[in-house]
Length: 272
Image (cartoon, rainbow, N blue to C red):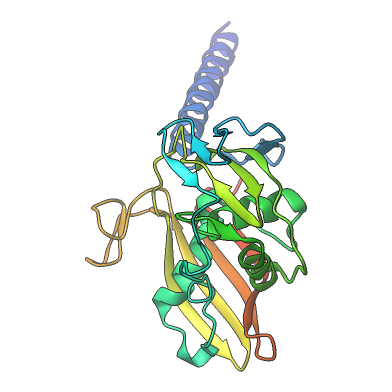
């Protein structure tokens, strides 16, 4: 009888420990996913539809932004003297002349759209999403300017940016249309606040081959207090949840900086 009672007690203790362990694991997973949400590879990050929902054309051929009512394109206006995009594409510079700011600015458009992702190559949807942001549509952009962006980043010749309405989960919603050789982009609605979570760690240059290393923090900004603050050299324990290595190649004969691939890895602490 005594032996039986001992077995019951031991069994009860094991059961209790199992329940406690289960509860702890569940709470830990909830905590971990809160600061480092799981990435669903099938999740729709970018949606592009044909309808030009946020722009309209009036009887004079002007393109009107439905959200703001502003005129984004007027066929009577000469846009030929607008600022060219070459500077943003680092034209006229060699790798040894790049500053860290040059590199960060050049790559930031990818992180505007995609977080915690590796790329061995970019599909059509990914190219369109990145080009639509990297082209900096504060003015109408010519067909040639759009071609330059796609060629520089992705080595695509004679690129045509898809028109229609873009819904980028991590950025917002906007419409792009094309008229008289110009691409026009609407204002962004449902804009998603952008937290700069990729922090430049190092850049190595070997002739025309460039590798860029980033830490990825769960939150935090270069200018604001957060878990990671480069300017003040502050980093909370467990703040870095992953790292990026971006491989680029500079082609001097074409004066362009191509993105070859991006490797993202979670830190060991957050591996499944």
